[in-house]
Length: 234
Ligand SMILES: [Zn+2]
Image (spheres, rainbow, N blue to C red):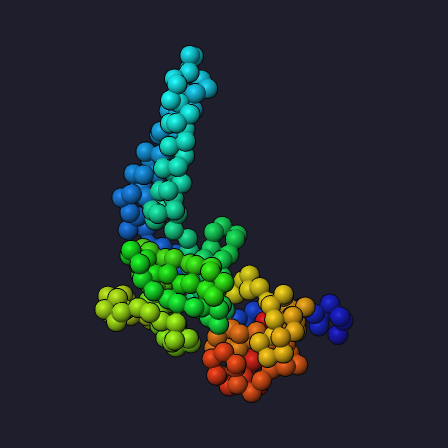
């Protein structure tokens, strides 16, 4: 067997880590997201015309451009127009923005709560992911059930919210390979040593805590899950 062969076989192991991918439901696009975005882009267009194309320029044209752009961005941020796909699985919860991922592993979660119709996952370092409960009801249901199973102490959501969401079903979402799980540069939770290569990292299967491969404890320091053989490579 050649080296290249061996290497590709090793890479195959990485692909065991999977997660569920949820796209927001199209039917619940919020009024503000749609009309705000529309009004913003119209205002922006009118402002551009008034400032640079019309001669003489209208004095408040710059204001129109600014207000139009601000409204457009606000609509993207607040409205479901900008709602991103969500991934939930062994590696934690992640929001997709094109090819960019914002990911919070379970072990880094500090609090999961609801505010203004959105489910918010907040990490120790201040990173927050927020999903609209209506457009992402299935993802929200999964995020809550996985939170209860893996890191129950961070759950800060009323049972009535959970009851209003769909019941998680094993067939939900699209099963995809875990991407963009950043382990290089993290510190082994047992030895404190930085992880220098992805191949040296071992993960807790329950909370995704990271250990150096030579320092895997019997039980996870964060969630108490049995490790040893169960601590899997990426
Ligand atoms: Zn753990």
